[in-house]
Amino acid sequence: MRLKLLLCAAALVLVAPMAAMAETTLVIGMAADPTGLDAEAVENNTSGFIMSTVYDSFLRYKPGTTDVAPGVADSWTTSPDGLTYTFHLRPGVKFSDGTPLDAKAVIWNVDRLLNKANPQYIYNTGPVEGYIDFTYGDVASYRAVDDNTVEFKFKKPSAAFLNSLAMVWNGLASPAAAAKWGKDYRNHPVGSGPFVLREWRQRDQVILDANPDYWGGKPKIDHLIFKELPDAQAAVLALKRGDIQLLADLSTQSVPAIKNDPNITLLTQPGLAVSGVALPVDVPPFTDKRVRQALNYAIDKDAINKALFAGLAVSMTSPLPQAQWGFDKSLPGYPYDPAKAKALLEEAGVKPGTEIELATYNSPRGYNPAGPNLAIAIQGYLGKVGIKANVKQVEVGAFFTLVRSGKYTGMMMEGWTGDNGDPDNFLGEMWSYKNFPVVDWSRYNNPAVESLLSQALVEADPAKRTPLYEQVQKIILDDAPWIFLNSTLQIRAIRNNVKGYQLNPTQMFFGMENVSVE
Image (cartoon, one colour):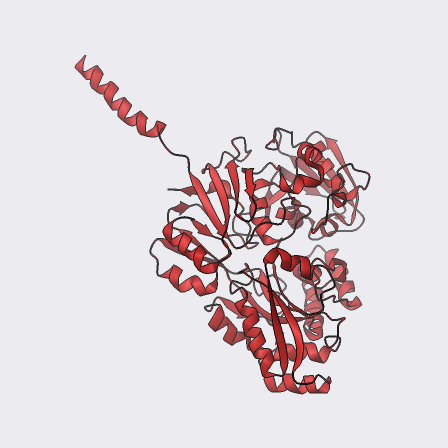
């Protein structure tokens, strides 16, 4: 009897702590508030951070890479002529509201993007900033073959199609939720991803709960919170105190403080990111290529990398980052040469003291961890060659509204993080006029570039695509629609009690179902 009582007591001791175990929460600090959460309509990293945990796409990227792997589609085939893609979906997958994610739902998602007669046609919901034309622009037809099979037929081959399907910007939405919320759906996202939106407290935080029915297995943490912390010093302090466990938008000025804290780890990865200044080529004095080239020679990029980026950036010598396949390492870029900059400006008739506005965002970005300090540094260098740059610092959301209006006449801080690992995602997004005004802020429009980009997109063999992209890089570099500044390492800071988190070159928060907090 005494032995039985002892065994019962021991069982109670073991069971009680487990029953009282607290739910786990991971808090991620980021510099800005999302502007919307409809994956096909909203295009900025801040929104993407959250959407990458809410939505699934056809395919996904292998951990830490931009190589495609099965997602909602567990297998696929491509016809020999590259014109037909057939995807086989995982059976039994559901959106978090219980709606089946079958072939019918997938085709509805595509139809929502391409069919003006669809009651939830995405262009009727508000401004659309996405990859719809890039991904599906050459699709001739799409259909459900059966409950778990979908087929796409193309007018011409699309070399980047598979990689593009894995982007966060092609997340699949619940048809029922989109119908329910209509124009307000972008504030009430419903996907099939590992987390479910519970509450969005605008200008404060976004709260998500684990999806218990996630097809990839219930996440290891119960709650995920994205907390807006626009002040870089306050964000680092919150990380040091443990108020947040992961810092997404990390200022390079904070790196020394991070490295000196034994409770925090600095994570880095070669970056698919570029940072520069967009020059509106249709506005004087930027209509003159000599002016644009002069501004490139005016900036000491290597000094900026050392002073502002803690050595975690390399100077751009091409419109592509060095980590991107297709990068032309033979290009010299624009070395620091203020004398040459002055001579070019004089040739172009630009008088010393000319004033030009320079718009910048007010917080660190993934492609520019130095935030607005980069604009201040550029202002100083331009002043040395006779250009008075008046810095206009704007909150991130207002900044995007300003520069994507297509009407701003000043210089604009611009940056880009690769979305799918394909060279076209840089060259074809940032400097193709078809993407004006969402991405092509320079209003750059070169028919030779457009032709080469079109040729490269229908060529499946990377070895044949590379020479085409090398020609594009040479032309864009010479035309100088940007001040080509630098390419940063992706950097994030994480507390040591967070396990299983892995960086992705696109900077999105993929694979968060595998992350745990000790």
